[in-house]
Every structure is written in structure tokens, then in C-alpha cells.
Length: 436
Ligand SMILES: CC(C)(COP(=O)(O)OP(=O)(O)OC[C@H]1O[C@@H](n2cnc3c(N)ncnc32)[C@H](O)[C@@H]1OP(=O)(O)O)[C@@H](O)C(=O)NCCC(=O)NCCS
Image (tube, rainbow, N blue to C red; front, side, top):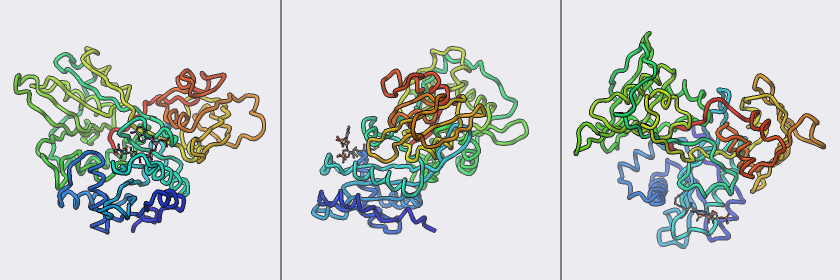
């Protein structure tokens, strides 16, 4: 059954904002084959891709059930059925500090045609998405971005970094644990069967991860019907001493024609449920013969791997903003996560689009639970007053940046940044292991 929000009509504020520009929104269902195809082709063009073949459109349509898609149309354009603006969204659970998940509004496929840029179409779409999340009671919105400059104006901020690791494996000998389970090659199709369950078991331990959009798994495994070179994907599993599969990885290899001992490996996805699985899978990559360089992306800023190799400078680490969050409902979001230390914070939150601002008292107990209540009148005597924007609160929400750092940057105002930072800290660095 289709969830009602996937096909709900755009709200009147969105319709009015577009009408003022001679444009109109429509929700695009995957059941409407032609409208879907036109929408997808515009998304591909927006991200500088080539035209999709009919097979690719059909494969994407089959994968795409379960998302809401909106197109913005210009009735006066020569091709009025091709949208000039696109956006997709769906509800997915986001892992938050404390091994819990909250429903979040995932936003993707934001494009505006170059012929219609800088007329406020993206702003109208994004503000509508956030209002929709609020109307549905979804406390958080999230996205990954093509440019860092786009979404701060709507209250989004980077909350989990994505780290690219390049390992010179000839330098990086393994000094980590050698677990007593075993690593084996498996068929891609077998990995495809196992990986959703493993991800479901592992994701809550890692703040920043979200439920994987179902279509992504075939992309990682090389099992998509329209996969270009499926045979390039090699799959391995780690089973612990009792035979339970605790880790999976997929990688591709590129030969170095000038020196066969220095070929390149790209770790496409590595998922470990236990420290043993993590160590065994990474050891496999560090010790591969005929390989000089191993690359992995969307890692956390604090990977144990860096403490498992003999030469730290064998690893080149590049940090990028990756998972962006935007709190929609402050009390619900604050209530859901656990905290790194006890303390009382009086939070005065502003919002550039007037959606979610307000004043709240957060009491974090020694066991990590937080209680949130409205802040009326004077702040309690034991409270540390913290004034900040919704973007800064969203940035600090997963513990990926310290409130003390944001205070030092002039982005947060407080007289006691140390206490505020300790309360919001978390011992597991946030991570999101893919793009969406
Ligand atoms: C990014 C994109 C969606 C912007 O669409 P748009 O309709 O031109 O944006 P708007 O006119 O609504 O602009 C909204 C605001 O964003 C700003 N903005 C838009 N594009 C920007 C950019 N590339 N860099 C910095 N600011 C930008 C505008 O100046 C405007 O600012 P203001 O409202 O605070 O004054 C469009 O350029 C695009 O499709 N780019 C290629 C695909 C892409 O990168 N999509 C984003 C995927 S995450």
C-alpha cells in the first residue's frame, strides 16, 4: 500500500510561491511511467549525467517505489512535461547517540534546470519539504549535498563527516588483532542476500547512519539488472569462530599496467558488526598481494584502522562534510538522543525560516537520558544558557562537532562552553557510510 505522504498534494504556500513565477508543482508517481521517465531524465541532466536508456529508467522506477517525488513545471516551456525543478523525499530512521533511531525526512534529487536557476525554485521546494516533515510529525530532516554552500540558509548543517582513506599498503603492515574467525569469498548474490540484515543489526551503533534505501544494495553488490560491469565487484564475508557471519565487504580492483605489484583496490562497502569482523576485513585489504593502494570512502573521522597499521603516515585522510541534518522538532529530537555527561542547559534556538525556533530547558542525567521542557521566565539557577541557531544545534546533535568548537567559531553564545560541550558529546564518532 502506498503511504499517503508519498502522494499528498503540495501545500498551498508552495503552489503560491511557484504561481508567482508562472510555474506549478506536481507530485510524480512511479505508476505514471511517462511522468516518472521525464522527471528522472531531468534529475540526470541536473547532475550532469547523460540521458538514461529505457532499461535504466525502468530499473530506476522499480527501485524508486517508496519515495515521494515532486516536479516543478513550466507550462510555457517548449517541453512542458519535463520538469524544471525536481526533489525526492522519504522517511528513514536516523541513528542517534545512545543506540536509538528517530524517523527523519530524507531529501534527495534536488535540481533546478539551468534555464530556471536563481529564481527561488530550490528555496520554494526545500521550504515545502521542511513544512511537510513538520506536518507529518517527523522531527528531523537530512540530506547529502553536491555543494556545501546550498543548505545552511534553511537550517541544515554538516553533522557527520565523511572521511576518505588512501592506504599505501606496502608501508602499512598490520599490527591489529588477528581474530579467530575466517574470511572467505562469496558470490555477489549471496552478499546481496546477507547485507540488508547485517546493516539493520549494525546501524544503530553508529550515529548518523540511516536505513539504507533498498535500491542502494544492488548498486554496492553489483547485482543491479542494469549494472555496467558487475563482474568487477568481489565479495567477501567474515564468519566468527561459531560460524556466524559478522562482516561483509565488496571491492573492485584496477590494475596498474606499469607495475603489477602496485594495483589499486577500492573498498566499495565494508560492514562489520563486531570488532573481530572489522579487524579481519581490514586485515584482508591491508595484506592483499599485487596491491599498492587501498581506498575507502565515507569512513568516520576516528577509524580504529588507523591504530591497526604500523605506519600512520601510510594513510592519507581527507575529511569532507557529508551527512547534513536539520532539526524540525527540537524537543522531540533532544528527547530521543542520549548525552555524554549530566548537566542543565537553557537553549535559546533561532531558526532562519521560522519553523522550529524556541526556548527549552534540557536536563541530562548521569545515565545519559535527557528531559526537555519549555523554558518560561528566567533560566533555572543551575542552567548554562546557550544561544544558537537551528543549524548549529543540528551540527552538534550527533556529537560530531563540539559546542565548544562552535562557540570558539562565534557560532554559539554561552558563558560555559565546556559544560555545554560535555553534555552534547558522544563517544562514537558519527558516520554515514553512503550517499543518498
Ligand atoms: C543548486 C540548485 C538546486 C539551486 O537552485 P535555484 O533554484 O537556482 O536556487 P534558488 O534560486 O532557490 O536559490 C536559493 C538560495 O540559494 C542560493 N544558491 C543557489 N545556488 C547556489 C550555489 N550553487 N551556491 C551558493 N548559493 C546558491 C541562492 O543565492 C539563494 O540564496 P538566498 O535565497 O539566500 O538569497 C541548482 O543550481 C542546481 O540544480 N544545481 C545542480 C544540481 C545540484 O547541485 N543540486 C543540489 C544537490 S544537493
